[in-house]
Length: 56
Image (cartoon, rainbow, N blue to C red):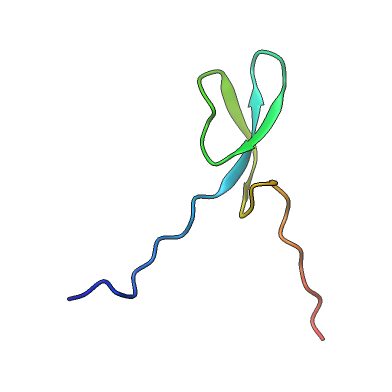
């Protein structure tokens, strides 16, 4: 059995908030201890919602 067609999805992006000073950062993983996951998941490094294309 081959795995030629198997592909892993990229890791999602999240807004993380510092417990120390409230600073926010967009990252795929917690930057270091002292951060909490605030919003997400997103599929881009800007942590922006994906634009919805209106149907024609």
